[in-house]
Length: 113
Image 1: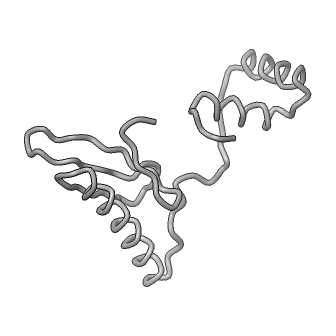
Image 2 (image 1 turned 90 degrees about the horizontal axis):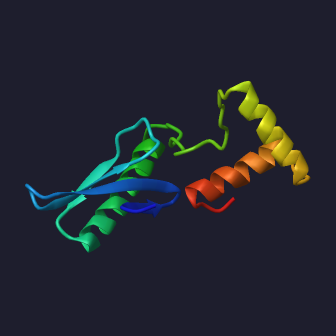
């Protein structure tokens, strides 16, 4: 994925604000707002790590479980025809629908299964 940083399982999207001349990052997939900014890429990487460490420390201090960016569970609503076709594709490869879907989504997202 382009324009992203990752650290300790957290992934942030990075954009450049041309008006202010700074990079701005925001952690994806978390309800809690975790953001950071810097003028250089090196500083941006440092600020990202500091933001994650601050978030984890805050959670520990307040007895809050840090929010995972993703639980590993995914509920989908798809047309019955797609479900049936996917089930046939999985079975034809000797896989469960869950295994086939995980591999297919990983490939589409260019992530390891």
